[in-house]
Length: 468
Image (cartoon, rainbow, N blue to C red):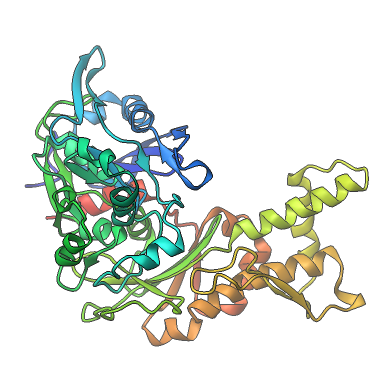
């Protein structure tokens, strides 16, 4: 079908994040964002697992989704030709298939509400302890299993609250659920990207580890049917705030892959994003296949991307959150000294002071949050002398430490040897911090381009626009 007919001019991109939902309208010919809306979900709810549990109310998430879509121009929604949906990976929501929602006719048009769904257990959930994970049969996959992964969470329920699962016959990520509802699917579909993020999925052969799961007592009837990332899942079963009935909907995709798609202009680009955490990634060649088994000590993970390709991803736990902790520490010190200085002032003055210091011999190992491949590696400060204890020296050393940590995980030389020609720099912590930019440009010697926004909602719309 043509995506450029006069009556069908927009792709609707939806991203269901951990704390907010975003909706964008991308004009098909110009590929420009015509409008966008974002709403906080405020969906966190208490869990029976106490501090270890991280759960969200599905109704609140859908309410935020409806508010976003309803706020978009109705005349544009009537011209939507495709819908793309991305969202927070790893997590799991359960429902009764074909009974998990109810469509309602309102003055604003048709809308849907959840019915009998479980809470969403998010990717942040911590109920699966290391002891529990070690007791499980290890997956036939190149990706390690972790708490918060959908299959791990379901296995936890099987062992600890098996009666909980008896009310449901379908499961998926929150964005898989939305696609199933929009299309009225008899059985949910899941992309390779989301399946890989659930655990017990072999991306090399594209199948669930069914024998391992069955032998573990896993209710395999809950598993969605897996299709390729970028496939069309179905068509909308109802008109939705002006979006026509019969509009094609893509299978739900991973928010990370879609964020990369939104700014990786060329196949030879790498994407460096420093926000709360930090990620450095590039696309591997089409011939690349991941190893059969995970290497728990490696700092680079291979995530499935599109058309059978993979991303090499260094996902650091330490990014802008390190600077935020530094600013918080300084604020606490000033309070203890009887002064009250806003964090914004501390941050801006720290950056200003560091800009007056071209380089420093102070060294900061900026891994205060550890790393997945080295969880016990914390932060340290070395080479301290009387001449490098100023605010400027410490701030610059901290920024350099954040960048050097990323470079230790995925060295610039490896990027060059892999054919990367430039780096797309993005993320709030990077784009608003000139010192961090300077340190990135010292460590990563490739050309760096700033200004390209990383946006999963835009990315998933672009994916749908590019599907033939």
